[in-house]
Length: 395
Image 1 (cartoon, helix red, strand yellow):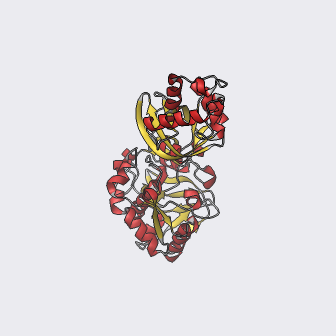
Image 2 (cartoon, one colour):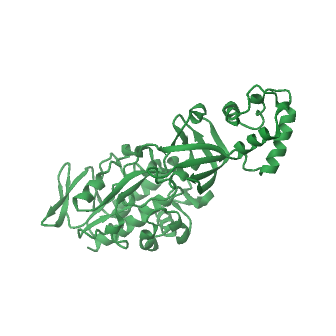
Image 3 (cartoon, one colour):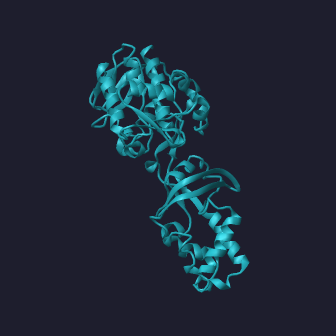
């Protein structure tokens, strides 16, 4: 939609092929239906939030940055607000208001929206002549491929763009999930299925090196872990085939070790005559108490007053660093965004134009760029869509 608007504003005839029953199907489910449409940050913060090929986006973002996107939407009648972490949402908290505003702009510019799916590029003697759809052929010298990746396939992201790119000779970096739930070893997570931790701290280790930390909310599931902190952490976990990953959960991040030890002494004194397994009612969620007690190695029926200093030390260590061994990500279809895609080495960073086939452009998630959570991935879509639309209109 952004590419079509940008091209339409240049006065050229634009046709937008959309296989879904309506435009913006994936946009409308972002941010849990609220649409975290960008991040109100500067250029350096934006580029730091893109772990792979961030420098490729320097030119596109400079042409149309977060501030430009916010002004664009507000000019279309969508008031915006900035929340924690500089996340930007419509004041209404309705993603539909964003997609409806884009649709209105498309109508104003007389962009033709056709319900069809692009199946192939029309090529003749190495020249681009249009697109073959399922219903008919569309003749044109300029094509923008903005089909998304392979995450959330029910929204139409079924990998069509990769097929079109390969047809033009492009390299496609193997797609995989990013911002995706993680699978874990052992039976701890299945036993804690459904338990949400709201004020926990998370550290991610690659082999023995800490590579990421966060504070917030996470969820235990039958397969492992999910929730906002875990999805953000997954963007840093990229080399399962050659490295091992471990999460450490700090269950009491507000207390340092000394303060937590004092708290343990106090709570254990209160429960001095209880079995060890029953000593955590004021410290941990009920569902976590027994699995946690088992992990300490202390006999569950040992009386609390018989705890040794070393056993108390073990409790403290586990509360500050509950380990979860990660075995891999969930399938890419469950990811919020797709990592991988059309190699940026073969795309002009200022126009999003193919270096292999004149007239062909790429925008958004189909490219091999992805970012952390917080509105950055949608800003990539807006910036690259804008660049591609302007360039193809001038072609």
